[in-house]
Image 1 (cartoon, rainbow, N blue to C red):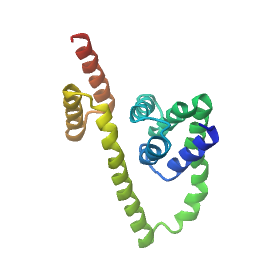
Image 2 (cartoon, rainbow, N blue to C red):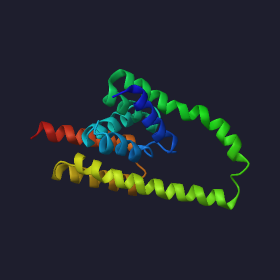
Image 3 (cartoon, rainbow, N blue to C red):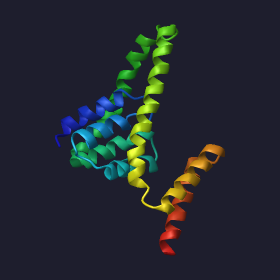
Length: 172
């Protein structure tokens, strides 16, 4: 895939989201559904690769670029991740004077709700691909319960799930 196209698609996704995985629905649509460059499994792999290392949550975009176009794609993904940071300062200066109006607040709330819906809609196919059996389903339910109902840091949950997965693999 052309690295310039990878950059433009990833830039579109990162510019229209405001959280780490907020760009995931657009990336899924562009790379998995529309262009068939990646599979759900490869997108899952990119998200895991980006989320396990240190750094911002949106760094998985670099992995998506790599899987789509190799090293030039990874460079394009990195450029797409950092471009919004260079554009946000003038945008914040322009929007800062208008942020207290009821219209702007309502628009921001609507975007947040729409983003949550989009994230849920793309998470379901990715979850279906990742949950491969009863053991994985139990692990998903347990990790969700720990994260939702306790104050355990997500790092410990990920490390615990990895340890349980390795133990299960060794003893089966």
